[in-house]
Length: 429
Ligand code: MN
Image (tube, rainbow, N blue to C red; front, side, top):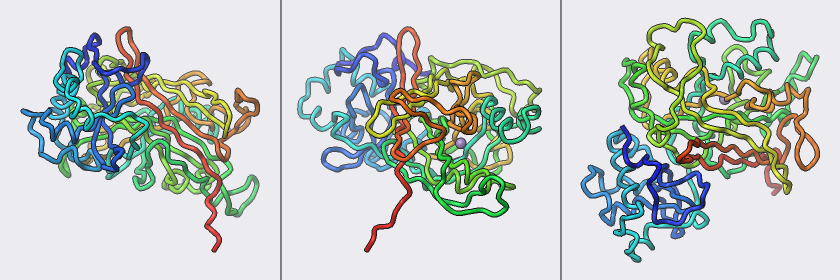
């Protein structure tokens, strides 16, 4: 079990903001470019980025079995492949190094200069090379809303939905870190009442409020992962904005599912928060409404109480929070998703990413997409600075945030932020 690193009483000798997402109890993992343009694996405490490559070279991880270059890499894949035992030893050691009473690094000016950066002098990168990306569809409220809008409110859920965590295979090449803008996509759309499609910019660009988990090497071809062992193979979680073009989607998706409407971009937050850091926030998933087949039946609490919100910020204006939801609303939990994903023997590798699906809650303000918030465009969402939105407009920025909070501690994910640029125009020669 995770240990003293989670002790809510623990304090750090670093000066950190009071309500930071990144207290010493968090210790997430990420990849960044230093002020000297060197790429390294790091962690974050408060508003400091900490260079784990430098810490390792200086001997601070002595006694932990790590290769010399494990943190001097541009992705976390190899570290994640080292497995849970190693992640825990490293996270515990980082916690010790920065714990208030430990002066070894604190009092070594030369080491401090090499190890510690302020967040504004580094540039965050994609933390893993994502091999395969799968997107689930695990919120009952979201599936019900979409089914009601596009099919039949009386039979909103398709017959399989309560029996298995529905998903599709996505594309990893367009997954980007927070802060990178994306262009409005173009494609085929079928205008209302028309029988033939037209080509043009998507007019219904939307966000999907999701989280994604990142796996380690889990199984060999042919070997399923039992539901109650699944968490051993989950490294951690990020916020995930699964950008969607609803007009392209509704024309293209029959019969094989989403394609170009979904793979023009998906944004993740840059710090991977470990399952160990989330341990104090475990909670029950919703009760199954149909008896589950044995391979999906689990014991214990497999969900996490993570507050989520989405803010929309028009260019140069104030942001408006348009949605507040929670990860715990998901009907299917990560363990069930991973058990189902591998029940046929499909291998899961280090650095694979699994999206949760849009996380909508039970109330209209907790719906996790503009499609639902504006109910297909029929109820525009009011913005603070005047105006409203049915979908996302050019130069709007969408910001997702997430955090856990109890009496003792707050563990957060930082931001997952993306600006939507106008359609890409090739430069004139
Ligand atoms: Mn999605």
